[in-house]
Length: 229
Image (cartoon, rainbow, N blue to C red; front, side, top):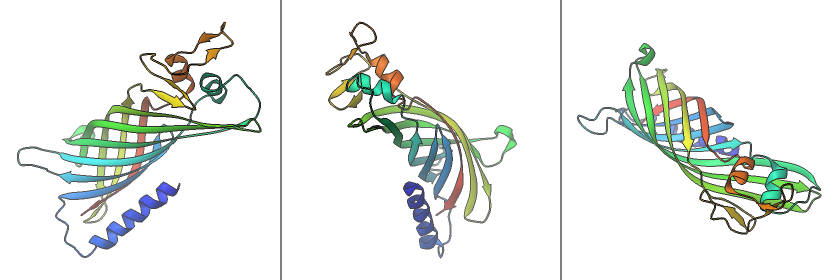
């Protein structure tokens, strides 16, 4: 929620700073909020018609998403120990960066619409706090990904558009680290715990990845406003 307020403040500052200038529609800023596998908010900066003969826009975005972190009991067994005491509180969030190429589209006969695609990068953190159990730990990962989506913009004033966005981002598996343990997709793991429910067989990356809900498929449905600089 603090990130949402900051994003809105930045947008208001942009309005104030550019309100006395004539818009040439070559650059824009956008603030969007909505569903991104959880509640999400994103701010972005776009350069329109970046070169002659190259249709479309380039956009750079930063977002924050609040997500389900996964199964706390399994996370404790896989990363720390087999204790079960304490009342669990958990939370998860991802901080993501994205670059989009926005290709003009006539899909659904909408005039100002784009197919968007490009690379993604996510920094994910899952926190599990066992109150009364003396365990409060984070599991972290950093991931690259790719994304595809569709966005439409509807004019409200000469400088303001209403925006609607839908899409899907896919993130590749990455090392999960927490406490003094890490699990790697190639199973070159560090300080692995044993599964006391399965003949003390060492846990694998698959076990950790099943327990921790790091970004993988991230469906998006967001609404916001675009301001032309």
